[in-house]
Image 1 (cartoon, rainbow, N blue to C red):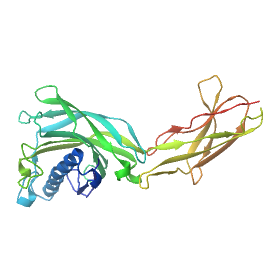
Image 2 (cartoon, rainbow, N blue to C red):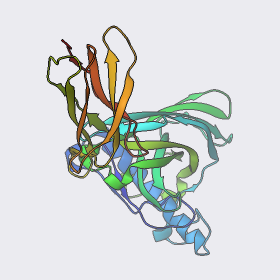
Image 3 (cartoon, helix red, strand yellow):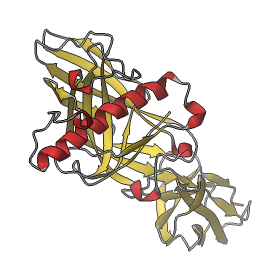
Image 4 (cartoon, rainbow, N blue to C red):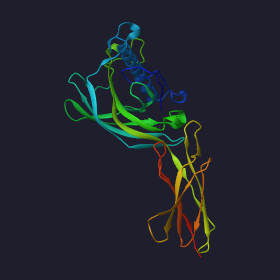
Length: 313
């Protein structure tokens, strides 16, 4: 399950103008949870925008302006992996931990109290994209005012969660919602009785386009002192077509590991062509393994091909 945010420039808080839940998953409990969260987040962010225009944040001035009240909750000690590798089809669940601190008036053990981690690309006030979990985090009480929370940010590339331009550095945050007995599915749902807290800028991670690298060294076998040719291809996930495409004009190292040893040595560096193809020639002197190795970029993770063994006669 996922939601993808269509974001608008709103001053004062993370802005979400729409959440889209795929129809194929509409019956899932995850879809219901995220749709309910969407109602609260949209109302809260709209209220923040009104505050920036001179109105008071989290204050309903008319029925149409109904918004949740500011919940006495803050977040800290958020930990998330330094990089998230996302391919074209597989669901990626990113574990996140954080500390939730709350006032004595907040019952985090209530069945309708939820918290979740989130990540967003761009600025907090006007993000390019926003992702959270399919389900709320699990928060364990550690004192009368604190809890230790563990949750996931879920990414479904096949469902359109990401554009290629989303690759790079994202920021992390968390939110909490106290429904206080209000039913988001009810026609009498009263947002003004719902508590909401959200905090960004708690950490960073890189969301990267999964990379692949191949190698084929020929001839096999090869005579000592003769030319050996290594060919291969560097590709990475295209999130908009759900395929792997060549990564062009990238420096890739040709490396060799002598049979019986464990360390690869760089022989030379070549660049991928306009299709991601690679070709390098060298002289064969010893039995061993040949591979290409790519150091990675901010948007694409490092990857090394599985070594291709060549016997030297």
